Amino acid sequence: MRKVITISLNEEEEKKVRESIKKKGFSSMSSYFKHLIATEEDMISEEELLQDAKDSIEEYKKGGSIRADSMRDLI
Image 1 (tube, one colour):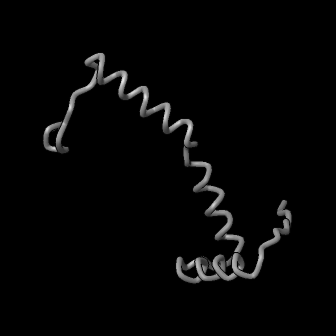
Image 2 (tube, rainbow, N blue to C red; image 1 turned 135 degrees about the horizontal axis):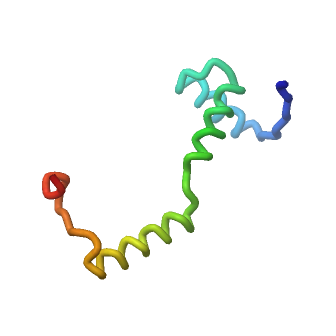
């Protein structure tokens, strides 16, 4: 069952949203916001990103990874 929600935007925000919808080829505001929700679900938080970087540095220091200057070095 579909549910209707209402969001409040100032004029500038509404203009940006409508421009993005048109520029990116979305058929409706609903499809645009569904896309944003799906995209956001795939993102990791800043904290997760920083922790991954710290873990990678530690792994490298322990010799658990190799230094590569290019993708060719990995092949």
